[in-house]
Image 1: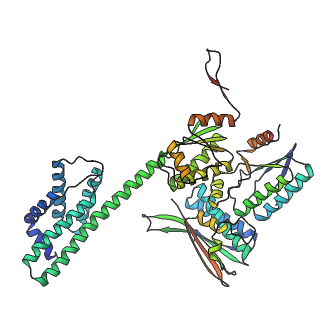
Image 2: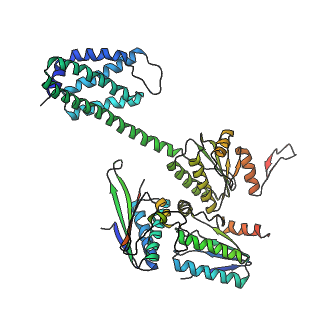
Length: 137
Length: 118
Length: 282
């Protein structure tokens, strides 16, 4: 299970350890420097969302492979999940510039652009799970 | 953790050598503004050569510190932004439009000198 | 066990080949990159296709695929259009159906025609699958070739580099170009980079978007972008599409761009009065 790790985000340091773990794993999988930066940045955004809006959550990092896409494809899957308040207005948070924290509002739409696949599930009152994938090309 | 701020004549030089976490970034913002006030600096060069990731929060802190410094009369030049970092910022739609940039510390200082007239 | 229809076709092979071959006379196989269709090449191709289809009747699926594969490789190599071969298979269907209806009663005919359909479907599937697979391979090879000639960065003077863009720019190529551009700027310590789009056939909003993104990234690493090689028709499309290149310095030719770049780096081209040394750079 060396290529799967789970980082708990309970405080600010969690953000740093999550992105360090992300950089390590993406380097191991063989991503170039630009994609490493993209993945690390996306993880940082996701971890910060957990830290800012919920008490506790986690980031799961996993190396994946898929046999359906032209033979063999490898990639990294990043899953951010929390038991926070959930997101009521899913449509709004995906709009550039929408912010409730005073940030740039580039967070979630930014993550979507940095990664290849993006999926968000949220149940108000129960929590949010965001799954993203970047494929190695 | 604190990022050291060096004084060189009328300028301040900062080379960020550590992984920027939120607290360090905010602490740096405060330290820099105090130093500008204290020294009456006219220009600031922030070298980001060793920084391998800037997310939207750090980008905001940097953008803010440039604007705040300019309010206090100090021009800021960012130098050494790595290609991977630049591409990631553009991907996220963060272009730091108002910020001056240069390739490295040396060219950053040259740029300040030109703009401040010697 | 071999189906009745196939056995029937094997037994009456010569008859069907002749019939099918006759139906070919109204059909012209064509090649994508050639308008010349000499009769003998046509005949050769038709014969070969006929033999591929009828020779493989007695084979199992595995060895048949190998034959089809070889045939398709040849089709692609010579640029034949596969849909016409599939159309000709449909002619064969009509011929065989007609004969079957003569030889068998109604109930039997229904069974047999579905057997024939199954066989034909398999043929078409094999042909198109092999064709698609082969095309994918060719595409993959071309992609690598394209990447290699993608975006060279040429240092022309101290602190000035030129990146000529040639051909169509898609998203994947754009990100490759962007990486080359930024790495090259760092490597050559360039202050000004001239992006020459003389060789780009079409500038639409997508291409403009990529160029704008690239120039923003260039600014972040600490250099500046000049867009040169804007032909009249490109200028027209840019304005007609409402693309805002307001933040861009643009020049019509690379020559003008180089002059501007020299000014930006505080240099000038001067002509020396002395005939001995000629023109030079200062």
